[in-house]
Length: 236
View 1 (tube, one colour):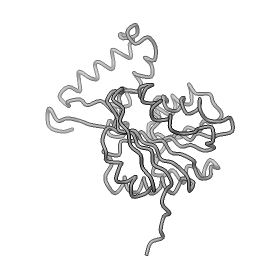
View 2 (cartoon, rainbow, N blue to C red):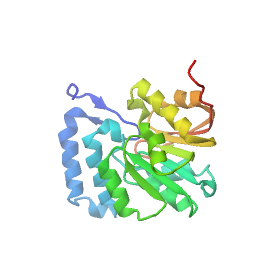
View 3 (cartoon, one colour):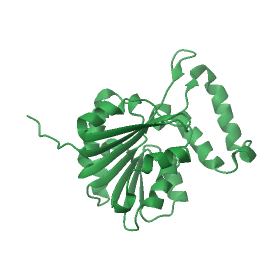
């Protein structure tokens, strides 16, 4: 806990004053009981789950609101998903991007979704009965080991909603190194973030990085499309 009134931030997540945490949790509880059901017109369970998991660990979850459909479309549109055979998603949350990816991937593809929240992973397994989906409760830091454990080779693409701005610099560097090593030579790393902490990491590890910004999300997000990981050099 910080000082009263300290602002908590997370990539593509809500920003709330710590002194208002009781109010926010009360708001979540009302949602879980269905008080906003008519106004939301569906998807209430997903939203309530997102709030519950966010308040358990805001720096790890990063988002109290599922991504908007506009953000999903903008993030995924530049990629030809029909050519993908193995895709990894870091931080799938309630599965908004997960379902959009499955809609776009070919029948023989595999989608590995990794989240530290067992609640999110249980939810994904329950509501997404798709044989292409491999949902794992674990850390993205261990992506290479998780892939090997499921018989997966190098990935064509990694999509990340993890809040790199909340990671310690050395951990963020290790995660990006592991991610680059998990990708095929022509692989891609996509990220949607509230802040720009991931950009220098991408520029060091990938040959090309394109950027964008999407206002039509709560909150607005920076978008990144990186391609062709640089070869990992052996230690001197």
